[in-house]
Image (cartoon, rainbow, N blue to C red; front, side, top):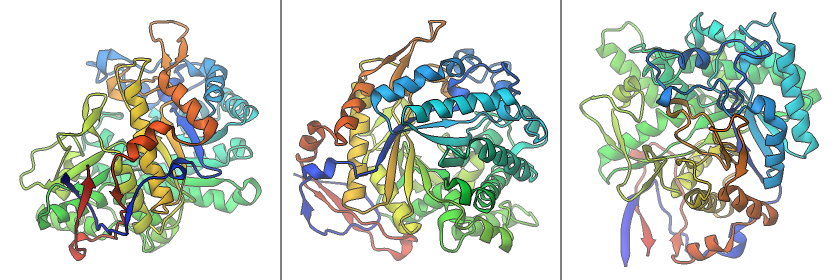
Length: 527
């Protein structure tokens, strides 16, 4: 029977297609790896000269904002067990390992005149161990764990953070750039902003009105400074790439109303566009709709200027094009409709929500990851967001830097296997059919880790970590064995092929926004 489900940006029926075996093969040179971050796995929070980060401070609040009063003080103890972690990566057959560097392990107080040699030694040893085992390091410079000393100066709200970050990048390029060929500057700027207005993550501030816009402005400027530094002083000799990472939630209109279509446009531009448009668009700067809406709201609030800071013409040019690849973290898809009465909400920061006035929801038929209703599982959304990037930002090279499934930590994790297989199926369609320029896929996460507010109650790892064991014993889950099989043949297993052939699916093309200039049609699923 016909089941009409989801409205998408323009659907072109280019022909009906049954999936072929070659559609499930990964292209030559395609990279498949796993990820982690320093605070979530390293432990050793006060060893060997490491300074205090904002997360070291945040988890010690009373009452604790973390489930079960957990901390990352020991975590998976990867600071002492990195060689074992590398062997686990090798045993699965991964091509790359995305890890982050603890800023305070390198600069205990964020100052360039105080460099911690033992921190340099640790990351040199990790990088060398990876390369000795033919695993490519993909290095994130900072993953939420800003030095507390810099936070005391205002953190990402202080424009001087741009210079501090450039100095930090200089140190990393100098000590590690001869071997690291893939860099990511800053992880998930959009999520970092929650620490400036919702108190739910470090640094735990609630600055009503402007905090997230000021922080985002300096995050983007800091990234561009680091990128231009590399191009100017390191690129010729080291020949690496520096990318920018964006959280890419896919958005679909809740219904076929013009209001929902316009709300979907706003949702895209106030999430992925906020950070991607200044860097990856041809014109640069913030999306026009953001500038218009926030300025209008600021005037209505009797402000003398917009709450959204302005880039100078020189900054627009410096920021535009300041990435060699588009790092994409993708977990969720949302249905979008307009919101008329602001009542707060968990899906997006309140002040942002008040500016773009949308309501995000999941279809009741969708599953969620880890029981978290904000992690809406809809694999086709990955294909959708990749096409959005392709059509709005000139099809840049995309490295999927996180995608993962959370659960309670069971080793027989068939749901995680199903999740990754379904998402990788849509990824391969985006490559083979839609011609999206994607060159890597990174599983979140390698290990069961400290998961921020959830503590250790939510597990994303392919590797089980026994947190009741002082030695933090590691063991492969079934999902790790699944990836062993995938990586041996560089093709998804037959179960994916069979599932695909149970229906014929229209090819999808996505047009540029604004939606109000686009005729929308309906996506059909033949079931």
